[in-house]
Amino acid sequence: MSTSFPDDPPERGQVTAETLAEWRATLAALQAERDSLAIVADRLAQDYDDDSDDLLELDLGSGFEVAAEPDGESVPLTILAFDDAALAEEVRTMTPWVDHILLSAYGAEIASGRPWCTRWPEHDEALARIHHCWLAWQELTDSRSGATGPSVWQRDHLEPLLLKLRSPDGPFGACTTNPDHPHHRLLPTPPRTDPASLPVAGEPRTSV
Image 1 (spheres, rainbow, N blue to C red):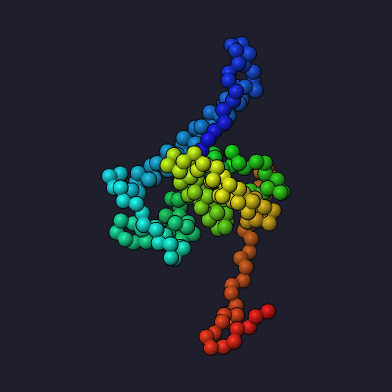
Image 2: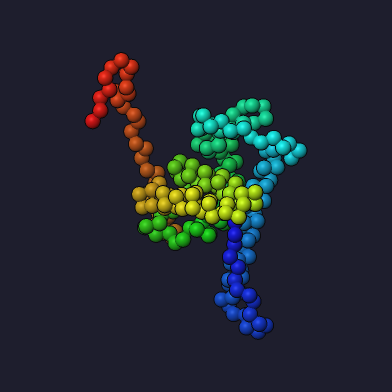
């Protein structure tokens, strides 16, 4: 993804404290992006054989398990379907991106209108939404996605994520709005489906 750079350096003897601060912020952003990309590269190197040119086959029918391993066994892409060990590893790999790219570049100030929770992995909705956005970031900021890839990611993935995630009635609505006074509370899960509402073959369906 692109990183903005400060203006051309001023002439010698004209460097100000503001200019130095801007250069340091740019360097920090580049280092964070480098670290996150290195994590992704290491993970891909472990998961796939560098000598193989085979593409993953997509199973578009289920909408749940969409990838296939070399042995033909389906693998879920959504993190909520991972087993405990895989989920823990995925969150560990994703966290530097959340802290140093998602929040640093796009997080803005925490306020009642833009809540955030430092214990976001415990919120299932937030975990799933962030993970899906992270997967899209890996694909759309790759050079093979073309010059418009990062813009597509921002428009189609990042902006909807922030609108839902940081809405006052989103998953963090009951959590802190002040980082100096942290508060964390999981919202209650809605009641499960009433079995009496399920349609029965051969019986007229009730509708209101």
